Amino acid sequence: MKLIIFLEGTIIMQKSGFNCTRKEIVKQVIEKHASVYDFSSYIPIGDASIKLQNWRSEGIKIFYLTSRRKSFEIKQIRNVLSNHQFPKGKLLYRKEGDSYQDIIERIIPDILIEDDCESIGGTDLLIVTQLKPEVKRKIKSITVKEFGGIDHLPNKISLLMNYPK
Image: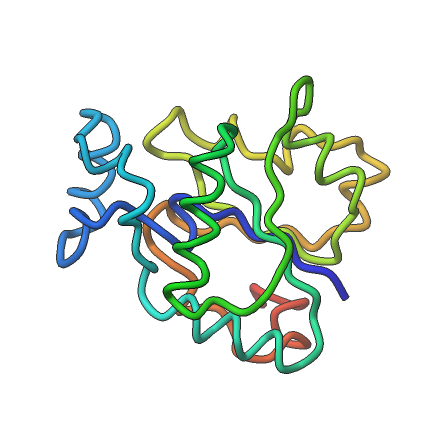
């Protein structure tokens, strides 16, 4: 099984969001707080790395999807994943001419987890809404609140495939 999980806003965030409410973190992004652009200092949202370690131990292949496009930013995000003990997985990013849709449609994961894009325009920007219908039918799509994390999701992949019930 394959999982693609979006990074920024879904499982990692700017360091200045630590101990802030979700609403305050969204506000930092909307107001373009400087820490939003300090990708090297990003931190996990809740216990995201532990949740992903649990899923990985069940054998799921993890693909991380970042919004970063510049090589030095991608390297910073890769370091964040490593420094915060996220399980090994391939880091995906948009190359020249790529859209998120292109990436998802190339891999066709069993599960796609992304946030609701509140700070950048809302659910109209969800990746899943842009997929071809024949691809969308093959994917279990889970949308979480931006900066709300994934701690509330089931620990077992089998339960995640049927989430929510």
